[in-house]
Image (cartoon, rainbow, N blue to C red; front, side, top):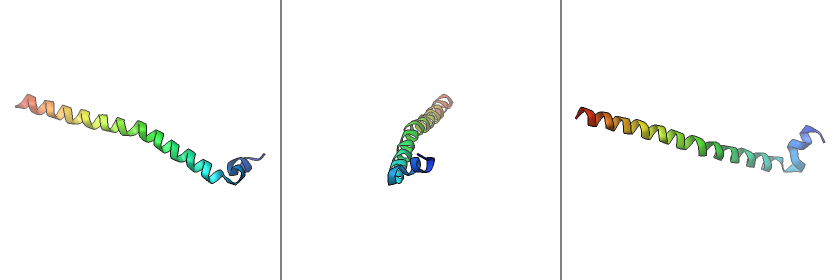
Length: 55
């Protein structure tokens, strides 16, 4: 079996590799989106605390 045959996977390679790609995108999004959200919430909370201190 050559590498090209492995990538082709008997003619189903495009389906298999696109499925792996979509799964990878979803897994990365499941990590990145909450991190970005937490960072945004932290900035907003710090801003509110500073405004409360200045009042």
